[in-house]
Image (tube, rainbow, N blue to C red; front, side, top):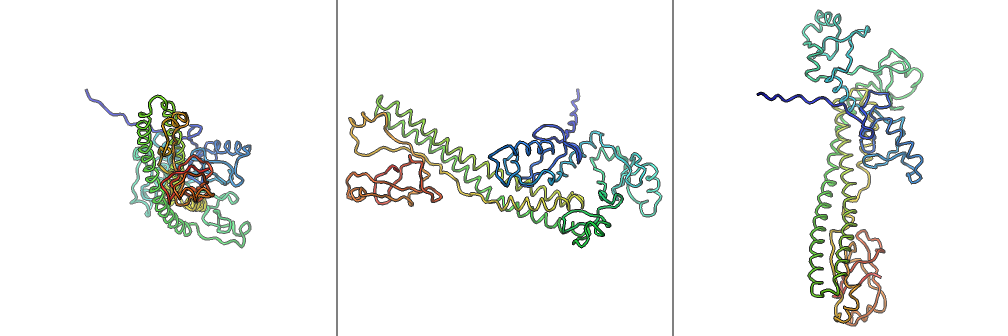
Length: 427
């Protein structure tokens, strides 16, 4: 018995929020691109997110809403967001494979159903235009395939050029640098009079080069971020080992003290878990932010390459500024490349304690430390410091600073003094 593998059914690209399939441009389900992080959602979901965010009193003034995927603030108004033409290309490919895309002749104004596709000039042709195409001197050597063959090969039809919204029959073949928009030959006469503009074909070549350069810079920008991911993962591993080693030390120490300190032992183990949980959350949150930055850079680089390699002149020109600004914004955003907490945790007790005193203090015995304090930045203050250095027990204050140099206020850490063997709890 022969087993045949069925070709998987094509799946329409859909919005990750509402799970509804995307539709073509200008519809409520059309895909729009967020330039701050390069995630894509349907225009309807983005609009709902904007409406919700306007009621949020905690929303930052410069942000209209946060990306639902990575929480990156987006300050671009809804009406200025551009369509994600790479997703639209996926949508057209799905429609082609599913036979849902209605193909019309691109060589005449009759809008007859297309029957053939020219591999040389990329045009869809109806029956009459196919006959003319074969007879014409300039195209009789071109290779034609049927629309059915085109579907099987997965080829997409050439995207039709958009017309000017005001001068309906005019192609958008110019780019106004002053307004950063596409215009036709008649637009400079009145609406864009005195503006600086160039031929679309010429400026798009420059923009494609710039898009590729920006994509390369974004690739390079991911390198230190990837190193940070490695460092954070190493700290997580180190923290896990320190947690296990410290818990083992606690169990070994409390085994000698027997039942009087059993409850305290369990309490300290729980405290270790809480300290480690706090640190894990800090490291995990930082890792997520770094991963989000990498994702934004990669998505941006991919978007730039797709625009440069696959986008039409109009698509490249209409999305160029937003993509470039988005890439620069993602790259130039300030980030912390150092771990925000250390993968350290430990256990300590005071020296010179007698058993009868320890028995009395059993319920408060020991302390878990998970140092975010930089020992070299700690300063001992008070008259007790002189007695302490003379070898006498004394009370004094320690002003501690964290890894960023800020004064440590949360307390609970043990700090090793540089000029002595004793440890002091920050007051």
